[in-house]
Amino acid sequence: MILSRYWFIFSIINLVSFIICLEFFILHEYNNFDSYIYGQSAFTNSSGLVDKSTNVSFNAEGTINTILFSQDTSNNTKPLVKDINTNHSSKYLLVGKWRLDVLNDNVTYFKSNFTMIDTGGHDIHFHTIVYKPGSTQPITQNQQGKPGILFKYKNNNTAGFNSNVDIYTNGVLEWEDVPIKVTFMNEKVIMIDIKDKKTGEHFLKNPIYGMINSVDLIHQ
Image (cartoon, rainbow, N blue to C red):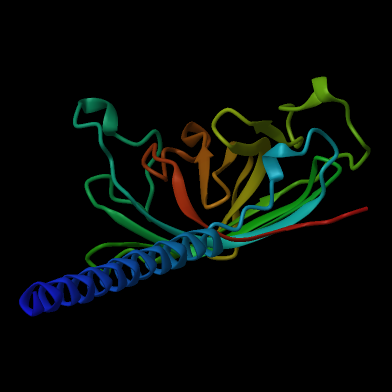
């Protein structure tokens, strides 16, 4: 009888210990999961730029970080004009900064300064891309996508604009009215697609990529 009583007490102690350990394990896992979700939320800080229908105003800036090289190995890789700054058999590193101002879906300012140098440390030169602003009047939905006017696609969270720019090399205007398309992807990556025929394929028929460091909406 005494042995049975001790066995019953021992079983109760084991059951209580198991419940305590199980509760500690569950709470410990829950706390880890909660921290992980909080970290993800803090990392993703979208301004909801694409969710705005029309007439959005904002400032954005970031960096240029990309490598350009000719991916076409055919005879068509020969440049359209002789270019003393670019060797079409080399890879080029581009590093710099950019800034964009938009008022009522109209691009009022876009400028990018970056250094271009081959990956062997040769042929270093400097470029500046300067946008020529147009109207700053409020626009309607059917005007989006026209040159100098912001376009937004909610299905893939992209925004951007088409325009003409002047491109300077080492501080000297080299190409005027060059068509470009600037795209912002998921408010984290910028892509500058330069229509390279105008520049004698100086940028090796590749888009220029960079990072979006900040997007600040202007509430009017």
